[in-house]
Image 1 (cartoon, rainbow, N blue to C red):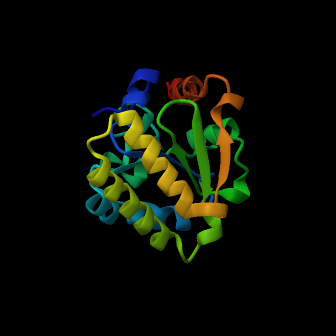
Image 2: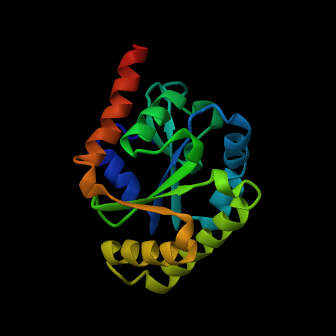
Image 3: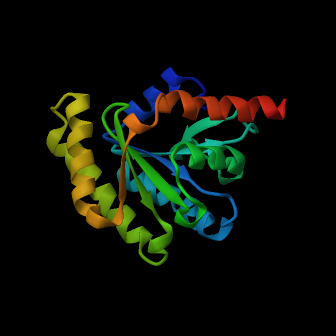
Length: 191
């Protein structure tokens, strides 16, 4: 699988699982970011097909920049420049980083979960969110994809409660176009 570089590819990447999210960081906090990325094998083994964390990646091994799901992502592929562009699109300040953007069932909503506040607890929260995604997939797998994603998102929001910042994509016109455009401009700068 090559990195997602178009709106259709990015949308398909988000539609693969009951829960989809995007990892964002400034690139300056390599230790914490490295810790999160280091756990990706355990994470992938735990959540399987229930939850995707998508990473911004630079051109390199795949010869193209864009977005890769955690199971294909190599920490050396992380693109700090692209991630910083995304921080601006999502209006996330550096002190909230790293952060995870959870996407709703369509392009109309998302919420941002700053991980920095959870330095010693993020593994516990990832485990619990993974359990929610797994349970939702198993119990609600009969639902249409849109309904399954909506149900999973509600359950994750309820679990996180006041720890997250909820935003509505309606305030960010053409969000997916901006996300994909950020990757395209990052790739073209490298050429």
